[in-house]
Length: 189
Image (cartoon, rainbow, N blue to C red; front, side):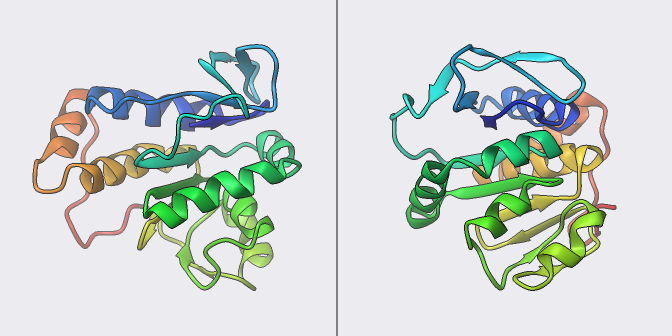
């Protein structure tokens, strides 16, 4: 999980909580900071264990970009992030983007032509390079996008389903957290 000041707290905590319950090791990496505590848009602090670009442990199964206008604006100034994202793409790892985070992908010219979803206010900015859908969560190959914090749990369970195919881990996490899952083929709205 890539953190930058101004991230959307609900999206981050929901996704991280669901992934931890699925026994997925999640590394919180602060982008471009010097202090391990990163503050979100509502001034809640989250401890980032690693400060990037000092974090050089290689590509993982997935990288997640949280939403939050402040975080996205901050992230756009880090060209090194483009290289990191390309490493994940080239390795076939999953890339997830929540809310405003598809703007980062657009800025770096990544995943052009893919189907995505994003914060509904961004459709006009993203529609030149993507097919923007109104669904809560959209998966196109290795790209998973969610409209915002209210669809973060659905993004997390989709990622869990992809990481643990045919194991019903997403259902176990949903039961544990008290969230109903949509049946396959239903849209997450």
